[in-house]
Image 1 (cartoon, one colour):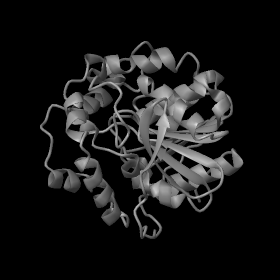
Image 2 (cartoon, one colour; image 1 turned 135 degrees about the horizontal axis):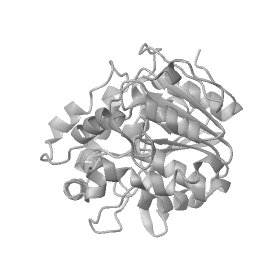
Image 3 (spheres, helix red, strand yellow; image 1 turned 180 degrees about the horizontal axis):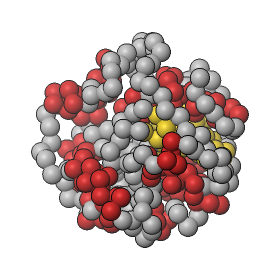
Image 4 (cartoon, one colour; image 1 turned 45 degrees about the horizontal axis):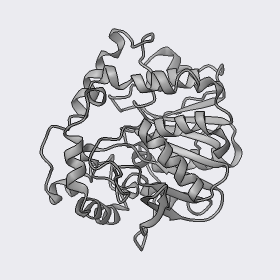
Length: 330
């Protein structure tokens, strides 16, 4: 980790936060969060909603084979923030229960932007806090660029899909070799579709015991058994080169995010993982420095930071949503 991350300057309004993995006790939800449906431009779209108050919209990332729904990415926030906010998690195009309008043609993260905008408008949401994780961070950042009127604040969680290389543009230098190698290894979709039990078992990997594990198992089984899941897995096995070659993958943010990101309205918070080899902390810090009105937090977590550090992430999002000021987890 660079000296910059060890001693964060206040030049871009950023803070460094290294938190341990200890979690406060959490209560398991007694009932499953139901799937809700809405038409977005004629596309049947699934979403999940809890709580009441100012709206927070959560955008999941991608996953191997697309066996995912938004509850699997955001159960800790759907439960953990619903005492203060209206929390909404959307199944984006080609994920979960949302209909696929393309008959199996892959839709990349840029192609998901208009669907999310349409969802926000169809739900008649105003001045939302938009939270993205992984590829969802790209979608959130792009919406902040093209439709700032919809948002009040943006939160970006650990994401290669919106981060710059460590070295200079247009791509980087030898300092990027480590995360390039890790990403190429981690995002290998060439394997066969797992059995249901294999998928449920692998999905349980986390930093420690999760009190929502029984509920998550149900969501994994629902996601796996959806009639369209096998077809979505097939789409992931035939991704275009620009989605599998990480030196090409980064071009979308170089074209559609970086030239505009310093002009984002409102405040942006970045919450980054210290232990995700595919998205080095230096990449997150470099992104924070590109955004004029931002703050940066570094947590001891792997890629699923909203799970591994759910209490800290929930506190940071909640405090940021209510105050918009610099936040430090107690």
